[in-house]
Image (cartoon, rainbow, N blue to C red; front, side, top):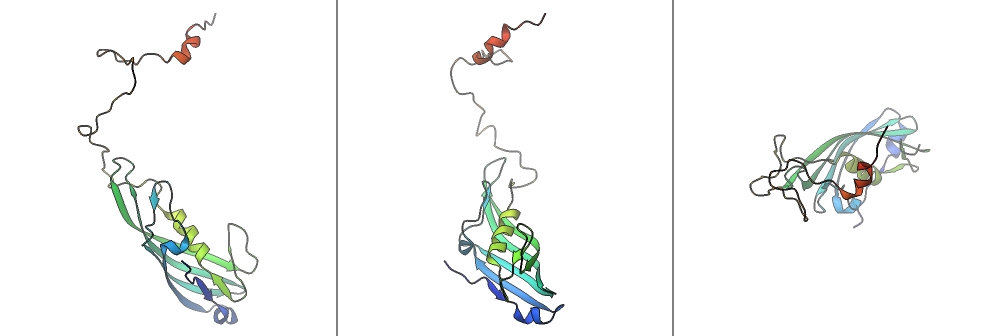
Length: 174
């Protein structure tokens, strides 16, 4: 899906110090797959940018707020969890961008798409929680079990030694 994320900034660049509102709503699927191992932006979600573009000499600075929905699984109980991220944005667009610091200003246009994608990926929750007091899985419903044979006897507090470490038992330091 191709969505227009290019803003024309010729009017701003003619008058340094001038400002103009930048409002943009982009379907999440237009920015490509947006997710980490723990959280994703649903494809039907929308990324909203409410910002101001300001000319600062040859550069254009975009300052504002980015909002988008996310969903994932709670890191403790693994139940589905979702929410909305609201991130502050302050990005500089310049004719000769510095990699990983500023964005390209191509003539009198800026493409906000790559910047939106990067900010979304950097602000997604890395370890989602359904609530701060989540105690994890219910031990009655999901008891802890040990797989395999030769486990410890009922009364033992220690697990049997790993046979791969048996050679270390014979080591003696005199």
